[in-house]
Length: 138
Image (cartoon, rainbow, N blue to C red):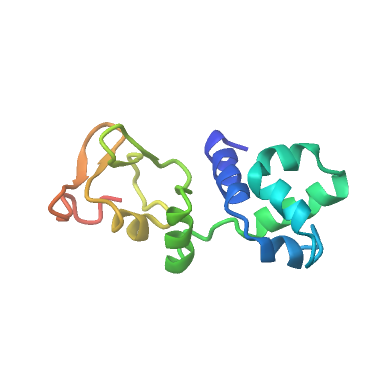
């Protein structure tokens, strides 16, 4: 697993809703005590819970692994703080994408969410005015 894949799964863990845990068999519908423990520190809860419960939480996380070519999935993931593999955000708030001969999965959807997009070498792909600088360079 890459660092980014790990980070994305941590973001998913932190954004799990109560109904997902109930539907996944992690906690009962009336178990608000366990829910409060989970929501206060999901990472700690995951690390300290029983194996069978951790396995069910992992299944919830895996169900939410993103299909970056699906626009609604990609936008939902982005709004939860999850970035596509090999992408990052630089200190200026620009989306950084790798130099590539072929498009990154979901790049079109994610690029639309940013005012500025650059490549890892610094080449500007999209500027603040929203204009693409290189037609289909991704």
